[in-house]
Image (cartoon, rainbow, N blue to C red):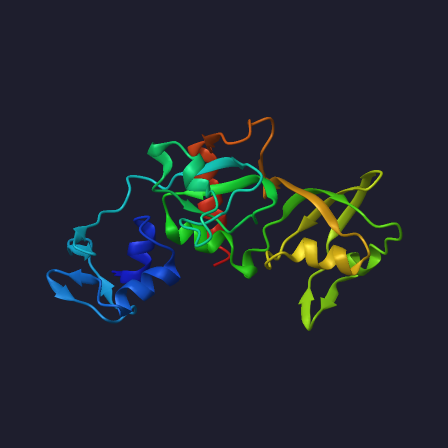
Length: 234
């Protein structure tokens, strides 16, 4: 037995949360019957249809590393008409789901997958997977200990960050929380506003010398190890 929303996410149709919304909207049927409860369990033999199309799980969970360019939105559609990652990706990868988000001005490593449930689990706060960035900052007086201790900005608490100064106005920063714009927000509070931000790693996965706008698969053995580790966390 498998939870219906989890099955839809695993098929790469949507994240677990968006799969639940699809079910609640009446867009999902099982064996010809419209289902309205995300808590529904299904069998392997059941026929699941989403928005009129039968869905099947992928043969195996795939994970890819994409080098996101500058001035590109991490979304499927942008109401302001800005370029999105799906405008940059080759056609054969446009059915992939992004893992978390990099903002419009942030470049570097963005994970993509065919498994919506994996995308969800990789970004859960409980996983605490470290992400490392290189930041170019401005300002003349920095108090980075604020970020190293953990900061509260506008009533929101941010976990401690690992920060190493690697050059004049250049920092290597590792975070494990994943709150929206956390590095930009906290460093601004430290008197070090971010001018450029580039992600170079996500957990053990490194961007390396992958050219901007290119995408490569993560070796399947590494994906399998990641999946096994996640089972012990989520």
